[in-house]
Image (cartoon, rainbow over all chains, first blue to last red):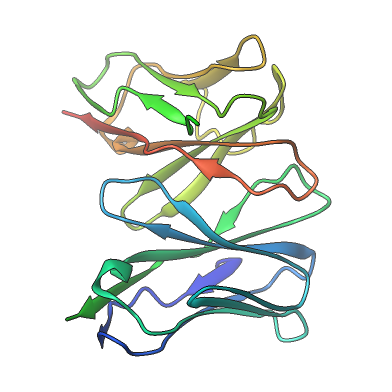
Length: 112
Length: 114
């Protein structure tokens, strides 16, 4: 079993929809949680960064962390065709060197 | 404001040849990471540098892989006697330090072994 599980999709939604992306993890030592967006043939771009449990909002994006359930989510409101990309969750614990453990990535397509 | 720069962006080589991949981190970032991204395996950690030292090399898949960092800046990942299974995108990331700092990635080197 992988340390971080993420549904690879693909996920297809109409423009304007609310998108929910999720990851579960098994290591209770994880404390730092990130969401990256990756366009084709580009490197991952940091979208959201949270520490421990709670919510964080940035424009149309909201990240949620529930450490008790070992579950993290990224919500995208008013989705746009430009949001079409692969979304990767990543995490690490404070006791290690910052080595990121990634989910497999979810491919999202937003149709005009 | 330059981000992480990697070169070459693409590399095609024959099986058995050696390759060198280069990473220029964001200026002032002391931590540097190499990852590999391949179909079916996702993104996997290879090695971490703090300054010029590599306290964590646990992800290097074999002794054909090595990396160094000089001047606390540029890093080179070397793969000797390349094999077809080495074909992947090699990504470099940097951060201001460890202790919970977010990592910023370059666009990677797409390596194809014929």
